[in-house]
Image (tube, rainbow, N blue to C red; front, top):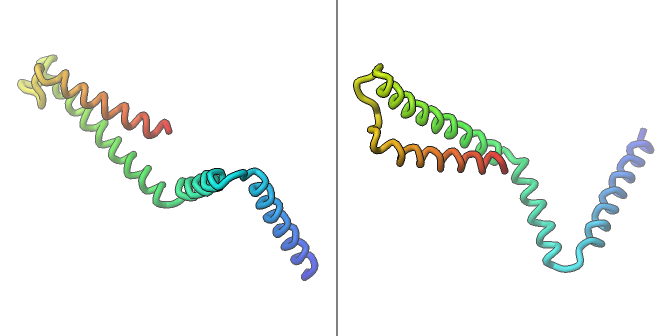
Length: 114
């Protein structure tokens, strides 16, 4: 059993050494090394629980954003159909509010696309 475990540890150590040699061979300057370190840090952050919490929070904010937009559109549509006597937003201010919602939607789309 000891020998098998030692063999496994030797293989793992050799793999790590080979990987480091491969990286060292590819690095031709300190700029390359800094770029590699940056990618390693980015990879670690993207796999962290902080990143998951950030994405979860942004998903919740996006849901609230869509609910607010639906509330405004529904209120205005209800007024136009004669269901409501008044709406949350006037006809004159709707184009500006619609533009704000469009910008917000594009911001969320860009974030979640990346």
